[in-house]
Amino acid sequence: MTAFESFVSYINGLVWGPPMLVMILGVGLFLSLGLKLMPILNLRAGFKLMWEGRTGLAKDGEIPHSRR
Image (cartoon, rainbow, N blue to C red; front, top):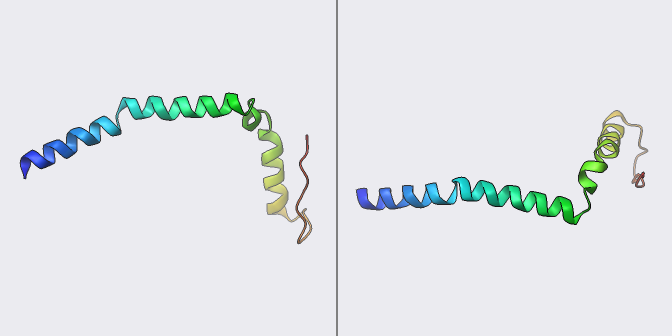
């Protein structure tokens, strides 16, 4: 049983260690560049739309249009 636990611990360290961190950051950078930094550049508009929905400025049943 100890050998199995050490094997699982080794695999766990390999999967959730630095290689996974590099892969997650790499995919995030790839998607950001692939979307031409759209998530970052439209952050203000996203927060504005989010707060409009919370404060009730949007009418019931209305989907707000994209603001650019």
